[in-house]
Image 1 (cartoon, helix red, strand yellow):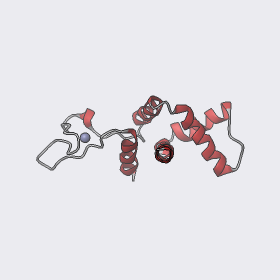
Image 2: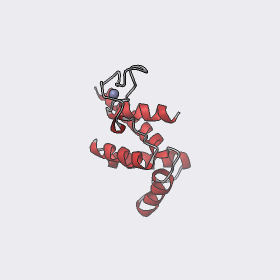
Image 3: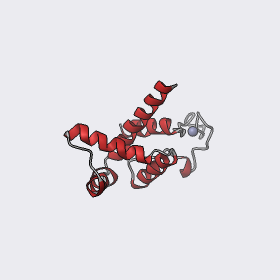
Image 4: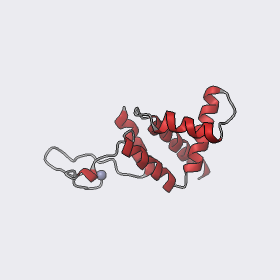
Length: 124
Ligand SMILES: [Zn+2]
């Protein structure tokens, strides 16, 4: 389940999800990267390091503002309240999403990137 989310995030972010050719060939069957090195391991966007990496990648897509807006809208739909602003938003985002060790950020990012991809597909 966690790997499914990480793998799909890699697809949406344009990163190779490395898969070994076979037991003897220590290379990725997609990009050829040697699988021996730790820097070629697949990312875990639920880990502390992975969460920062994920936010940097979303920022790199110039999507951080939209990501926060998307999360605010998710909250509004779930709780039927007006969009959160300022300190309340920051506090809830950090507490419920950033500091969650069970993949909350990765799941919200997945929904965000899938919605972004769907809207891109519609506009083409
Ligand atoms: Zn690869």
